[in-house]
Length: 214
Image (cartoon, rainbow, N blue to C red):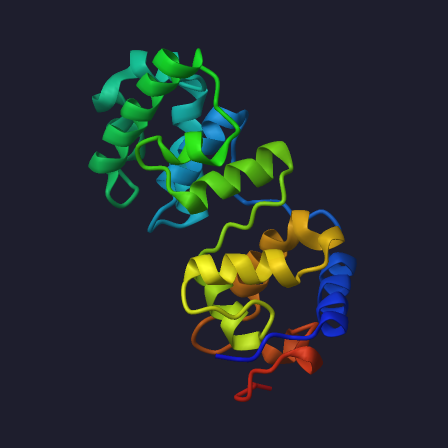
């Protein structure tokens, strides 16, 4: 595990990320808060591209909790059967839709605790929704962020909660809103797991990773 980068280095890291991509976006397609919740829940152990392919047809017919309930579990399965764990995910989509209709008037709540109480929605999913829909500086730590956080020294931690805390504690506040998107995109396309593309990395000189590639 790399040591935590100092404040001035952190500012430079995120200044560069911001200059390269001022308004980073999540790659999951959605039309409202509800479809975002569903898309993120479906993305566990699946690629965003695979989820988007499945949800285009699904969201065309069911973009509210009630419409999803009307479609039914078998109908959901028919749309998402190309995604891993599709049967269990379909069950969760129907369950969370029922809770949203019965307890929240069909609206998606914007508290982390309320979101985490929904079937198939964990802390990471809740943080993604709070960040992408409401602009709250929540940090959703996935495998990419966990890897590069520890590899670079941007946000080292022994588990995802520790990495989340390292981002909140050490990333300057003016970069907090987009921090997790910059980190996810960097981990997905540049600081990849097996052979990081260090030659194309805009923070190469600031990174603590010792086994840099050309």
